[in-house]
Image 1 (cartoon, one colour):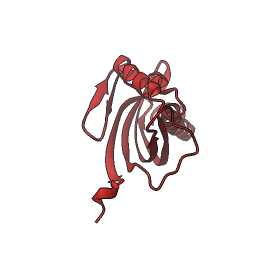
Image 2 (cartoon, rainbow, N blue to C red; image 1 turned 30 degrees about the vertical axis):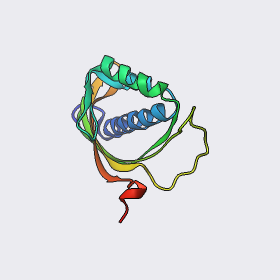
Image 3 (cartoon, helix red, strand yellow; image 1 turned 120 degrees about the vertical axis):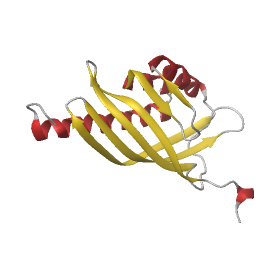
Image 4 (cartoon, rainbow, N blue to C red; image 1 turned 90 degrees about the vertical axis):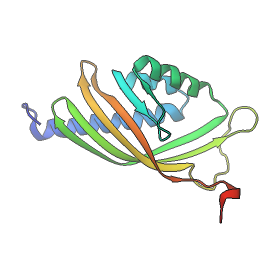
Length: 156
C-alpha cells in the first residue's frame, strides 16, 4: 500500500473487506438480504455459479429483496479461509470458501432447527473491493462451485 498508513493501514483494509463478506452472509441468512446492496459499489457486479448475475446496486437490491421474501428457505452461509490482498489504498481482492447449508420447507416458513445431512454446496468466492466515500465496498463478487450435494437418486 502506498500512503502513510503502512502496515496498520493494510491490516485495517483487510479487516474492512473481510467484514463486508461476513456481513453479506449474515444479512442473507438473517432475513435482511436487501441490505446487501448497501455493501456494494454503485456499479457492482454479482455473478453466480450458473453464470447468471446482476449489475448495479439497484438490481442487486431488487434481487435480494426477492430472497428476503423467501421465508420457506433457511440457510447458513459459512464463509471461511478469507484471503484479502490489498493492492493499494483504494483496491483489494479476496478469495474465500463458502459452505452453504440450506433447507427449503415444503409448506410455510422454514423453522429452526431442521434436519440436515450435508451442505447444499461448497465453493469459492472471488471478490474485488473499492474504497469509496462510504468506505470499503464490494465491487464484484463471483461464486464458483466446488462440491454440490447429490440428490438421493443420483448416488452410485
